[in-house]
Amino acid sequence: MKFLRANFVLYPFLFGLYPVFSLIASNASEMDFPDGLRSIAGSLVITLIIYFIFLLLIKNPAKAALLSSILILLFFSYGHINLLGRSWTFLDLSLGRHRFLLPVYLLLFLLASWLVLRTKRDLSMSTRILNAFALILLFMPLIQVAISQVEHYRARLLLGEENNGMSRVSISPDGQRPDIYYIVLDGYPRGDFINQYLDSSNLDFLTSLEELGFYVAHCSQSNYSDTRFSLASTLNMTYLDGGQNLPEVVHTGAVLDSMIHTGEVQQNLSDLGYTIITFESGYKWLRWELTDHHLIPEQFNTSRFSYLGINDFEQLFLDTTAARLLLDLPLLLDSDRLAGIIDNPRAVHRERVMFSLEQLQQVPVAYPSPKFTYAHIIFPHPPFIVDSPGQSLQNTPRDELSAYADQITYLNQRLLDIFNSLLEHSDPAPIIILQGDHGATIAYTEQEIDPAQRLGILNAYHLPPNASGNEPSKALYPNISPVNSFRLIFDSYFKAGYGLLKDNSILGRQSPYILLDCTPPK
Image (cartoon, rainbow, N blue to C red; front, side, top):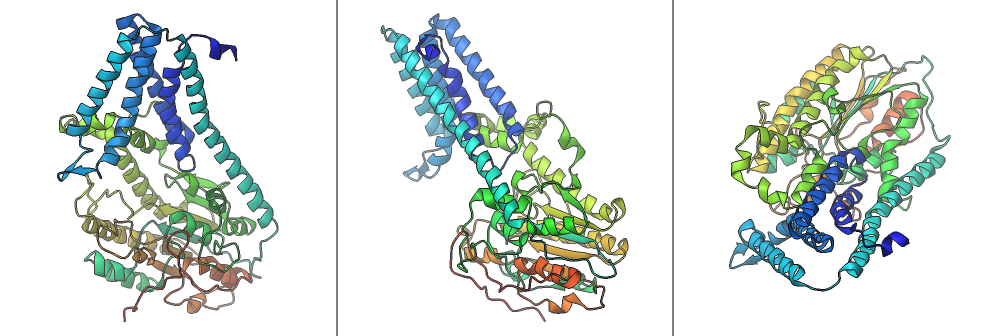
């Protein structure tokens, strides 16, 4: 390739782009690519500015390119080393602290600059070599992104072939199709966990649910401790062991995402003529494909370039660079305007959660029946955004267990208002599933809590009598798990023949079956 043999400078700009594309590749399944566009543009602009400053100062393109690349390398590696260095200690001092790390970085830059400036060598060959190396380096994350997209495409095709014609449901003779609400509260733990570890209680809330006609499965466990595993299992009414009857997950991430995007539950409901309504959770891999209505706060539809506050990806990217040094300066964060820009992901998360809670109450009258509403709300899962009365938090509380309990307390009251609205404005009475995808998201090891406790979840059902007058709620039991939720609903209301599976739970991707101790309250 002739351009690789030329002496024009290319590699500093490629080195500037590499950290962004590498981070995008690592998070390709978690984010929308446009969320990284400002980071790409910003990295390119920063590199151009650095290069032209050096070029104006030393009048030597080759040396300016080398100095620019060194500074870029140090800038984009600082946050990584700062994070890693927090666990490196000497005389009980963390070596990752800025007071130690910054002088080392300055010394390295001064030494490298001195070596570059004093050299008398012809750097044209170095420029060509570094151009080629930088191109190869940048291709690696690009190829990784491409491979990820191909894997997800193949997984969707494979899942589509497997599910083609598999629907086993039929509408009951009188054609009655009650509205169905599936509300997933991310990280909502079981009642006994709240009592024992959060020094709180949700018993009044659970009692209120029972008074509204809910059945509360007090001993329920999630089938998996990870959201991706849990939702893929629940929305396809099966375990993720490939039919091997082993406590393990055999599917790749791409397959699991496809199982969530177009699961058997969604296909059955579409075949039954339900209007499907979903809410934006903030996670790309949790979004259902081909829904009738996808509800998202209006302000989130603005241009990603014109929106002032940084997004989750940009915050993650800044944390990996020397910008971490500036963000940790209290003087900067004293500015309300700057703090608002930096803390924007927390504000966006709060707005998304509040939007979902508010709009859920409007669904019964806003959309025609029969409708299926799926709301996966990332709450009470951190970040901690409100206290127990619902006042916004500007910073993360130091006591995460107390903060977790506060968010649960606030959420409980909001949910009771929602359910009263759903029941009041629905005719016939709706089917409602209220579930945690897994238990509390906390630092289990630091809190000296058994990580298996993450399997205990809130699980409650409102199941009205079916068209034949039978009561499906009588088939419920204290330790029913999510894998059986829709099996019971399709069997009870639509004459499917799924049957119930044994309730199993595993921790992580592979572990023995786990059964937590549980005594239902009397």
